[in-house]
Amino acid sequence: MKRYNLLLGFLAILFLGGNSILAQKAFQTPASGKYSGPIIDMHMHTGLPHEIPAGTPSLCRPEPCEGDGGATVDTKELMERSLEAMNRYNISTAFLSGVDWAAVQEWKKFAPDRFIASPFILKPNDPGVEKLREEYERGRFKGMGEIGTQLNGIPPNDPSLDPYFKLAEEHDLPVLIHTLGIGPYTPHFRSAAGNPLLLEDVLMKYPNLRLFVENAGYPYREEMIAMMYQYPQLYVDVSTITWVIPRTAFYDHLEAFVRAGLGKRIMFGSDQMVWPEKIGAAVEAIEQAPFLTNEQKQDIFYNNAARFLRLKEAKE
Image (cartoon, rainbow, N blue to C red; front, side, top):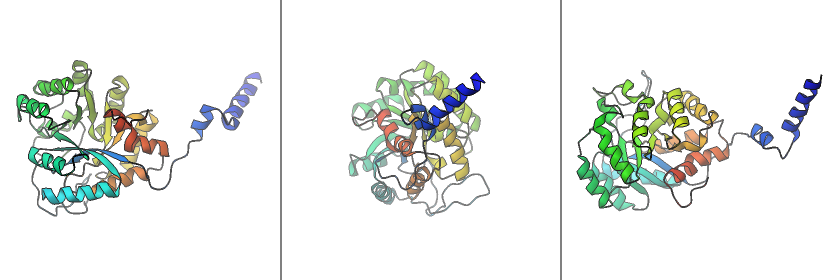
């Protein structure tokens, strides 16, 4: 009976104690309506690493499925349409990469305060590290990646990537990497090369590396969570999975990270590639998440990236 009374007392504090922190957390309610604050897009491109015909529908998974929209393959038009979407959705800054370095610089020149310029690295030694070092010393790039070597079957812990990680750590660069189970239908892509556990060798060797993994390692949920628990410098974005997979699958993945207590290290990205309309689709996927509070949305849309990028206005 005594134990029963203690239990009732605890429940009374939990449900009636207005000043109880535990009670406040227990009664957090999901937010509704559109997010009105600023957004940082941590995953944007000047195009695809391979050519596709103009008007090609957007990617979708799993097959059989049908994408929507049509690819904008002209770089200038893609830039203009991407900036229009950024303005419409209050996206102040975007982490921008591309295999065509000249295109990245053109976007940066056109809107110098909107983009963090970064080179897409598709193959080790192409470009060589020394050429890349010159670009950083000239101030032309401020980030590294997307490191997309998985598209060629090369895992993140392959020794050929060591010089790039070393350079990124030396220059304290934010680094985006493709380390997950899905990707384009290219001949050498290997899902096994995207297991996030393969990042452990990298983070052990380069403990000060500022690394973020696209799409939160989808669908390697448990592996990605384990890595984030063990390595607090590791962040993730939720980019393509906001629109390329079924919304239910995306919400299952995102909610698992939030429930695991990792809501402060998830960042927004659109990964629009050649479909600028997907910027809005990505924003709406976060806005409409039924389990996110206003505070959690603000963290994903802005605060977490501001902290990761070490912006002055970052909030803890």
